[in-house]
Image (cartoon, rainbow, N blue to C red; front, top):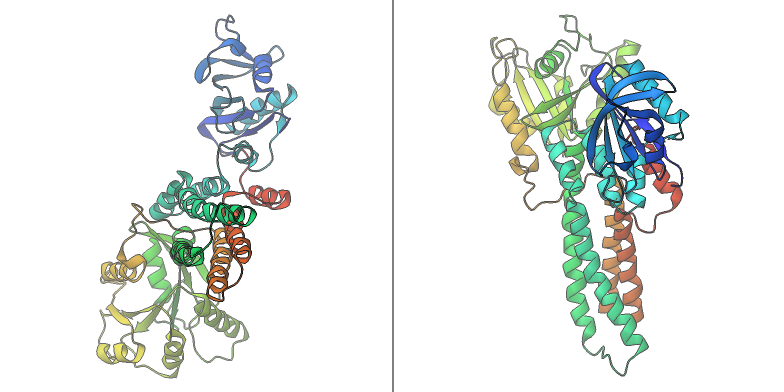
Length: 457
């Protein structure tokens, strides 16, 4: 925190503009050493905060680039420190030369996520908001972006702070009553606390309930395509993706390994995995592919079972139907452009799943498939008006710990335990929730979280 850091904050590729960011107590001195205004009269250290200035970056007497310099003095900056952003030309070499000049004049190279880490350490963001910054960058769909932006605006912070505020009030009351029993009466208090603990536990459980949806919002719905060889699995993948990603031939067993692609479906991200056709085979490589397909089905959020409607069902289909049990699945009744050999009603009865007629050749049925997937997840709609979605595994773990502590509070009350037991478990829930916001976290864990960020953010 005592050093002044700098990094390129835009992608290292040819573009219209590149940004070099500087942050720290020496940021103004660094820029003063290398910046000159066009007429050479302006002292950059004397300009007003949150202003932009046109001029040049110099390395000694050599002109490095024509730039715009944005000056922002702390604490009203992203990091809470004096911050300077240099908008230079977006060529890779131009950006590197500007950064080299900055480093030569007093700054040090920033570590991954160090700007956001300083924002967290300086109290500009809590940890849930800081983690949302990276989620915004990595968002793969419209709803993932909306969810991340809501967290960045403090949706998780507000929900957690509200619960912690209630818990803290009762922790303080119990501790005060135990220290000063003459003025604070605990008669009948356990029953009052029981209602509070149950109410806050329900709020924690509501957040936990959103975690599965949140995971799919952030990472995409893990969608595995299963079927016999030549059922049309790879053709379906190619059609959904919009390009030929999977090799399609009339030779059974062409797909031998898994192939993964992301697609956006009306704002929802699908992580689609094409698999080898499931059948009995003596081919060693194909056997491995079939086993991988079975393993993928075990981990799937959704299985798309592709049936070649022009061929009768057999033992391989029976094995695939067994894999569908207890899982969300849709049956793709494929090749409807050919004469049918499979009864749709019987197929629906055997699988217990919705059957959707599709012809990839004629490009029919895809809209019905999209509608079915949307209705199957998120109750058909994702609303960010009053819903908070937990998308971070670390947050989920902390909420589970808080739920367990609150359950222990209710058990202690019902067992007639002394009041100091209530306080211990309430504090356990309070501290678990605090870890979501970044309180009581060790330095190693903080460093690990920010090490996953990109450089310059």
